Image 1 (cartoon, rainbow, N blue to C red):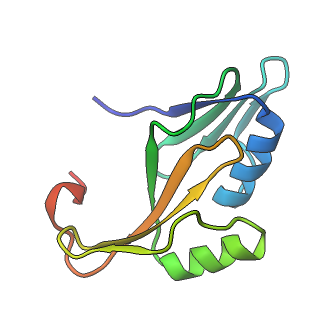
Image 2: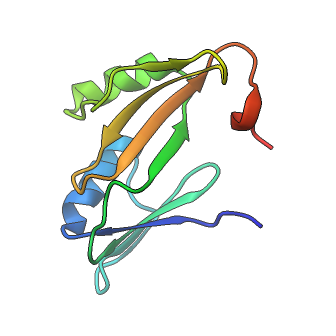
Length: 123
């Protein structure tokens, strides 16, 4: 199996599109104005936004970055602030910072520190 994309429903898809365009530092790769569907093609997957009932809080999406501090500084400059301070996991060898989009969905930016280990190692 291969994860194709994560679809996120939004009460206000325009606000979510603006937030994701800033967060991912790119415009959507596909936009259907008729249905309110937008799709971001990322290096290893896709994120879709669709108009509909939002049910945030049940999922934490993890996005690997090369430099957590640089990405955090970039997001801070454009007004996206974390909802949690940096967490370091010595056992799994990562650092992460969590953000919330305008609908309350949680996004974790993380970087590996030291050797990749445990369940978090790419397969």
